Amino acid sequence: MQFTNLFISLLLTTAVAAKGKNGTSTKAVTDKSLCKEMATLTKLVALASNETKLADKTNNNATKIAEIQAKASDASTQLTTMESNTTLVSTCAVIAAAQKTEDDCNQITSMTKLVALAANETKLADKAKNNATKIAEYQAKASAAAVKLQTLQANTTLTDACTSITSAKAAAKAEKGAAASASTSSSAAAASSTSKSSAGMLNAKCGLLATIVMVGAGILMF
Ligand SMILES: *[C@@H]1O[C@H](CO)[C@@H](O)[C@H](O)[C@H]1NC(C)=O
Ligand SMILES: *[C@@H]1O[C@H](CO)[C@@H](O)[C@H](O)[C@H]1NC(C)=O
Ligand SMILES: *[C@@H]1O[C@H](CO)[C@@H](O)[C@H](O)[C@H]1NC(C)=O
Ligand SMILES: *[C@@H]1O[C@H](CO)[C@@H](O)[C@H](O)[C@H]1NC(C)=O
Ligand SMILES: *[C@@H]1O[C@H](CO)[C@@H](O)[C@H](O)[C@H]1NC(C)=O
Ligand SMILES: *[C@@H]1O[C@H](CO)[C@@H](O)[C@H](O)[C@H]1NC(C)=O
Ligand SMILES: *[C@@H]1O[C@H](CO)[C@@H](O)[C@H](O)[C@H]1NC(C)=O
Image 1 (cartoon, protein in one colour):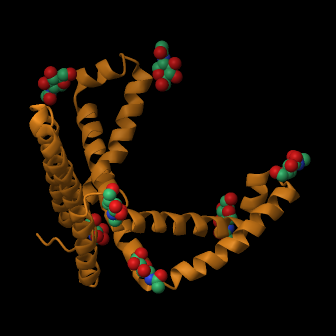
Image 2 (tube, rainbow, N blue to C red):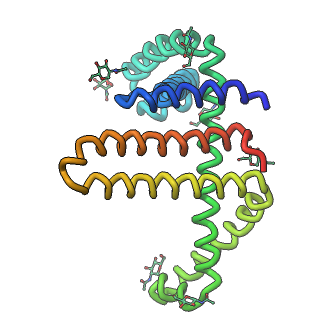
């Protein structure tokens, strides 16, 4: 559990941010944007060092190539500085793992739907408007999906994580719904309940983020 300490510090900072109610810029959001920036810088540096790609992207425009290379040189310096922060690098790894898990879960959901569609002749004909070519396309896609689905679903850590994410999302949604209906109550109560509701929403969001981060870090053991 190499990420445990990191996760706890993330959780604590999100908890602090949630208490501070203003919290549009929570620690988690900041880290996320820093990680995104690092990814962008990394891509730029990679592009500048790949002559084939560079020529391709710029239509071989020497001026543009020089511009990109100059930008990449600055990016490289900035990237070195950011990468020297090992805390940030580990945080980005956790966030990336959480994102990957969520993407995998979304893929499981959509591939399951596709496989079910292909298995139901009535539904398939309806969806493809009886176009035999389209029906065959769906079936080909579904059989490729079935193979991938089997691989993903064999990973019980992943499927359990997906279950947790789904229920965390449902809870966040329910909380948001409750907050919304609470805020439509009498205007006298509204002033006080609004701040409570928004804090509730923030907590629900943080709970979801925490779940996804935990899942990504492999901390939730099933
Ligand atoms: C929270 O909001 C108050 C009032 O709007 C402001 O004075 C304070 O600086 C804010 N705190 C943070 C951490 O942004
Ligand atoms: C350079 O980019 C091309 C695609 O434009 C890719 O096929 C190739 O593998 C890249 N080369 C390196 C060294 O990354
Ligand atoms: C090359 O790129 C520069 C800078 O973006 C642009 O001003 C110039 O018109 C381009 N040249 C050609 C031949 O497209
Ligand atoms: C390293 O990154 C972490 C997480 O973003 C941040 O809290 C910390 O201040 C950074 N440390 C330095 C020395 O920049
Ligand atoms: C096939 O889909 C139709 C709706 O398009 C549904 O009524 C039917 O129950 C489905 N059949 C099976 C076996 O799931
Ligand atoms: C059937 O679907 C194929 C593939 O999507 C399409 O190219 C073709 O035009 C469609 N045929 C008719 C009759 O709509
Ligand atoms: C199973 O899923 C978890 C969570 O997404 C992931 O960390 C792990 O690497 C996966 N294991 C395999 C063998 O793919």
